[in-house]
Image (cartoon, rainbow, N blue to C red; front, side, top):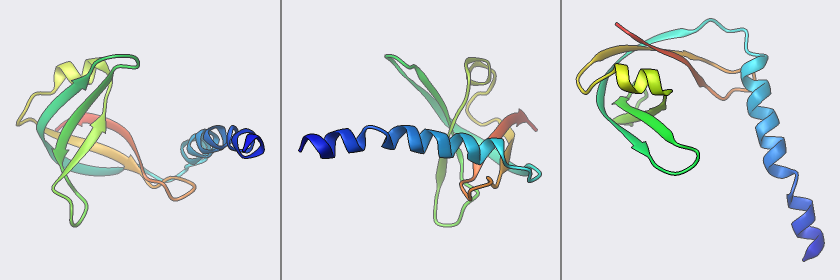
Length: 102
């Protein structure tokens, strides 16, 4: 059991490294995605998370939750039309590049 436990310790670091490389090595151009803010919510505690709930651009989904910083969270309100810039990712994991007002 001890070997299994110590063998699992590097797994989160490996995932973190892969996600970092996914964005760092990505050379694709950002894709402009129009969306509308459906709602927004913030979680308490540490770390504090602020998310915009927007209309989805993917098939089979109704909403997407986009993590944003404090400035974007305060700037956008329910019903605002926004542009989401997303990139494909070097390792195939798409990621949000930025959120802007339309």
